[in-house]
Amino acid sequence: MRPLTRLGVAAVATALASATALTGSTLANAQGPGTVYDSPSRVSVSGTGATTTVSYTNKSGMDLDCVAYVGKEALMLDVQVAIQLQFSGEALPEGFMDRLIDAAEQGQLGLVEGVVEDGGTAEFTVAENGLGALLTDGSFSPVAVAICFATGNEYAEVETSVGGVPAGLGSLDSALTGLGSSGSVARTTGSLGS
Image: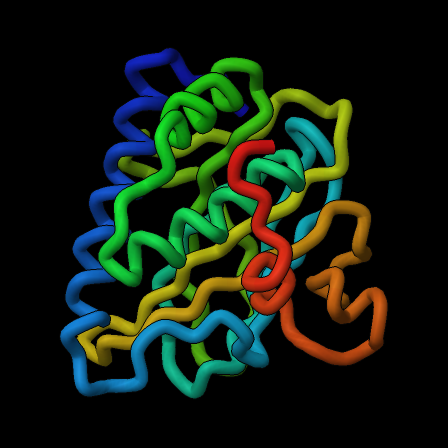
């Protein structure tokens, strides 16, 4: 529930971008299953502002370590696209990190993490190392983008939820069709620049 200073936000954004880039280059060279954007797992968001909670239901077949951005829908779709660019070895869009920093300074960006056992659901919390934050702006329905890794298995899944969807549905796909997974929305609708 604490707001981040500009330096703190920069550290969070840089740390996550670096981790994503390193994992992306590892996965790009891996012979394993790689990165999945439409897994049966799902990320769910409930509440707004300081009462926002992010949970993850893991259906990957493996235990996962996860981090999640949570904020306004347009920015989270841009986060999803940026993650895809990083995983494919491409540079982040110009100004993207500044937008993350600005959103965090305004209480419109949170960063949470969690470990989710195979078949389980876990609620994410602010990182204990201080590189995390919860939203403070309650004026919008938040969306989450979760990046989850199976340690030592060169597997990652990226899931996106949509604000206003009740916990348990987990995605715009689910809300619209009753089926689907939370990762496929941003793959086809990323905004980059909105």
